[in-house]
Length: 235
Image 1: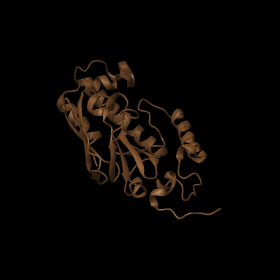
Image 2: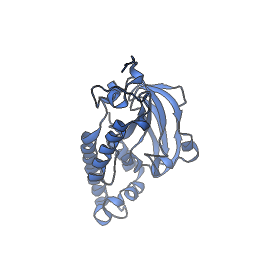
Image 3: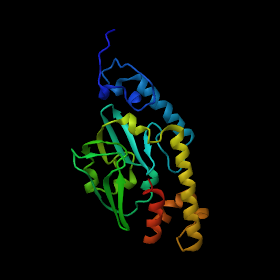
Image 4: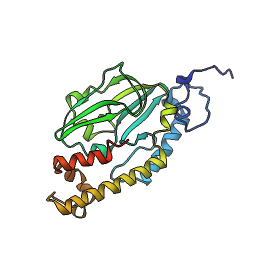
């Protein structure tokens, strides 16, 4: 079989992400037709079902420590959004300030702002690259960022500059799951401590994890900004 030379943008997405060392493609990089791609995604989905939690994640995504996700659609396009953990903070979204197609950002550079009733939340780009398109639905329905962050509430599609390099600073698989569990516990402890001191409606003991969105929505601006500083604005 003849093997054609391909540039970096034409590599298998699993190779570009660093999850496999090398893979030839005989399907012109049409991932939807690839049995290897289906096997990889299916395998991760099984892990997710076994280890699901209140803030479920899709383990074939990559995660930025500030709770954004990256999904490789093909070697030259990724989709970017926020995870459910961060979405639980955003019960009062007024608007989303999106970048423009053609804008370029470095990894960790602010590329989007969420205007919440209690403040403006800057979001860092999880990868370096070129903005191919933005989710225009967020301009008309900013609440999608909160209610469907892994689907219709995605933020942008980008062409990564060096996804293999950037992926080293992201989390995936079991590592992402363990990171999320740690942040969940820290969030539960933070809210439980506040609910003991202030009148915030149901406590963590009363409502369990389902009480989290309501507790966050009832936080004062001071406590809300403290929460954001702890979990979102850290490097």
